[in-house]
Image (cartoon, rainbow, N blue to C red; front, side):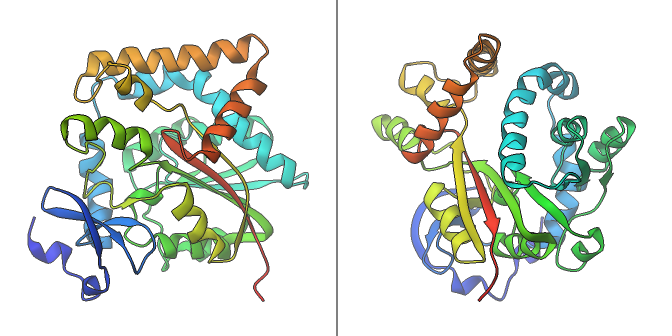
Length: 311
């Protein structure tokens, strides 16, 4: 790709401590933005083409079968989110937008619970899969030029999306405009540069494997994502997390770059969460993950925030 793909006249506003480099990018703790991100920042045009084509081609063999096989487990986590949504959204007719909806399984859970569901997804192949399974997903890269045509929603959901965006602030502002008064924004994203990751790489001066531009542009944690929301028209209602997979690294199971170990660890996590659910102790997992989130620990942060009136 040419350097022109990365050109941005505003790049010089991004200054801060350098935290690592990969693929010709540096990751900094940006003083201006208040969160970590790579520089230079890829353009919207580059990213739109990347996610429509190259990203899907990089999917591993058996990707669709794996997601389908995992759905009963994923449904446990999805239902937890909808339980939170329904705690705060009392309307009988609830409408949700999933930005970056992937194969549409999160929306399937909502549809099964009686929600009016809609997704936006840049990958043509993923949209075709969703539509074949009866899920309403639109095929475009959402930005300030096209979001208004989608209407209004009770909930806007972004799972593993904000780390890919050239402007997280634009995404938060678009969500606010699409939400009904008092509507909810739920954001989940990798909790990178967390204590467990840093502990693992500090021992032998290992590579920070989670740095992966241009796919991952931004590197939020619990504090920085909550600050972004609080400063831009939202009140944080709740936080949780996902299983802290880095514990396995610290216990001696190095899954980095090892698909066999990675698959085994994934299955152990699935077994743990599924067995708790099946034993009637799902409340324990939810409480445990809530407590971990308050310590800033967990593979992903999950934030629920309410749109508040602007003064």
